[in-house]
Image (cartoon, rainbow, N blue to C red):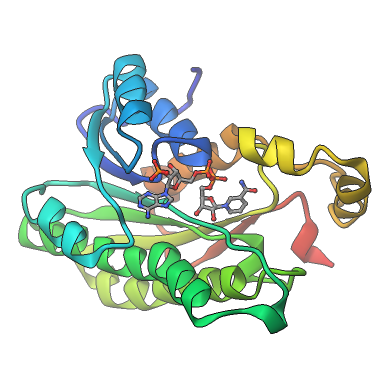
Length: 245
Ligand SMILES: NC(=O)c1ccc[n+]([C@@H]2O[C@H](COP(=O)([O-])OP(=O)(O)OC[C@H]3O[C@@H](n4cnc5c(N)ncnc54)[C@H](OP(=O)(O)O)[C@@H]3O)[C@@H](O)[C@H]2O)c1
């Protein structure tokens, strides 16, 4: 895969690496010289990705705080982190249950706080600067039908980005979010294939198309790189202008 960045000598942890945006990010990072630890639950997909890219697979359920502690106390020395693992449980706002709300918050938001804490403590101890990128969503910035828990989790993720930004900035660690619109991962391709659903959604996007995974991965690499060395605490829409309205 073609890339404009050089991450030679950098060690980067990517969660949600087995599929979609996380997978595209690992592919680009490895192609640009980074040593990548790629985390997810699907052992087979991780093995396939490791074979293809040379990344180091890490089996981890980010919804389990004990598993996070166990996995990350043994790993250290990261220059960058991408919190990309996420779930979307879509339901009407008035049908939201405690179980669905808690699950989405745990996987999407709490994991980002806990994993960032581990990685940042390592950076601080080693006195090395770093960059953390949280993969949030346009749903954290604007209301969408059937997205109450998901939107709350992504707005929480953006708040986590800002809280980490002010606490870690003095250590030379930058923290940012990216907020993609619908991104055509294999699952999203299927979910948005029905024109009745797709056409109204496309009308809301000034560029009149959805994003491709590499169009989210490239800005993630930008935020990990020194090209963005003065950028911290932002939530960057990658939405073809959706949130400009
Ligand atoms: N695609 C979109 O339209 C879109 C738009 C805006 C934001 N996003 C965000 O982008 C991120 C990636 O989404 P995607 O579209 O690429 O989805 P995806 O293809 O479904 O990938 C989700 C990734 O998260 C991992 N994951 C889910 N639950 C996990 C858990 N409990 N522990 C560890 N890993 C877990 C999955 O790995 P395993 O199943 O192997 O664990 C998989 O690697 C998510 O945070 C999502 O909210 C996506």
